[in-house]
Length: 321
Ligand code: NDP
Image (tube, rainbow, N blue to C red; front, side, top):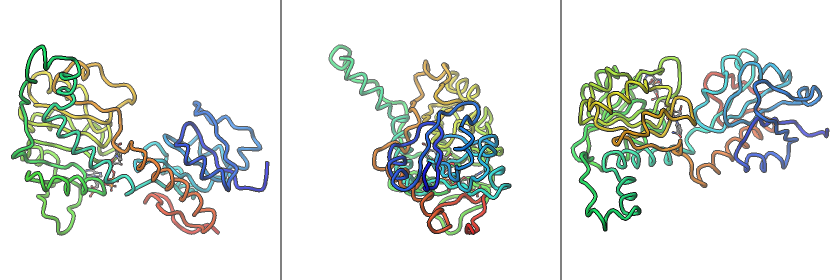
């Protein structure tokens, strides 16, 4: 031990977080096991946690002097924030620094889904252009679409702005409408699904967003309908989506996120009308570097200035004593 403040890192994290924190903290990396297995003397020293993934109540309770949990990622559904809040522990996330990257990915995934570009590239690579001729025409196009964005927060708004030059009609559903935006507001997801042919989901994982993209919503989008998910797999009823894609109730889907990652339901893999990505929406070197810096800076600011940069709304922001 030394005199430096101890920060625990359970499981894997971006190496830049370790590098930055290592300059001024004692950083203890531990395996992510079912429960916190840390020597008692270390457990007593831990005052901060930096993590990409989850921290449940058992982990929080294992460290009596824990003050701050810095999550790598804007979605902090893996952290028991209620429990943290009840113990006066501040939780931080990485908002805004990934908005552009995730919104870019959403547009790319929408175009890939509509125009089947990944399949067209495989056609070329597999020598089928020479053998079989031109790649088949894509059944769908961006042209003239009516797009509904489910969740118009930091990222949803960037998706909307990117959609404007595509000359599509843009609407959104959130619980409360946002002021002075040129987009149609729908008070319910169902009303939006009935009015659009393209649905993009970018809501957080919460009890209210569990499997809300269900058979009813998908059939409202219709046979030319397209569903894109860059939010959380939690929001989708996979059985309903696989059935709708298979029987033509829905036209196509593009998915970056899944219910039980990294496991992807086998039903998706055999469908021709789904475009699949392995949760890469923010996964570029520059954006992940920015996220890593924000994780480290949240910890540094907390211990140096008593106030983190980006606390989540559920946990107290009162400066440390
Ligand atoms: P924000 O908190 O800024 O936005 C969330 C939006 O969702 C708000 O507009 C909110 O509006 C709306 N919302 C929340 N709950 C509901 C609900 N029950 N019904 C309708 N609308 C709801 O978050 P971000 O834009 O920064 O991020 C959104 C999510 O995207 C993250 O939580 C994360 O899960 C996911 N994500 C996925 C990534 C990937 O790699 N694929 C990368 C980054 C983020 P209101 O409160 O008015 O309802």
